[in-house]
Image (cartoon, rainbow, N blue to C red; front, side, top):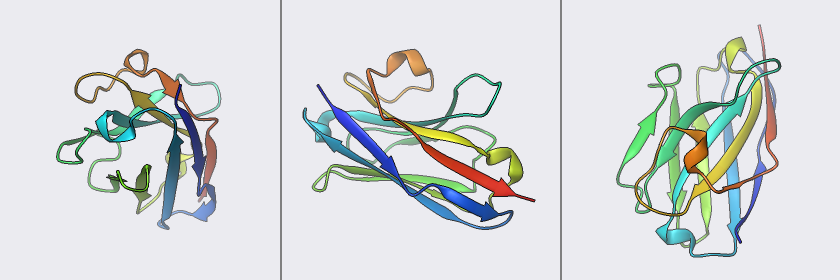
Length: 124
């Protein structure tokens, strides 16, 4: 069992920045791929970014490429999402998730454990 707790969400103006954090406990964090997803009201959960176990390989949704950066610190069992140049359409609840086996993936069904989410609101 892996527990995940996200933090760092909040209200920010368009063009601003936020850094989300996800703290993991349980399991063998350094062996897991990690992902960030988001869900806006009335919309399905969508992929944002993913990182492999070592941090050497990352993947991003086209909508955030060049603006968001995913990173991890295996010693601290943390994964981060640095979000720059935020837009109102980035408003959503952001979730981190654990993929237990293999490389990172963009589909939510590949991830086993999820955090409770943190709200990000970008005002125009």
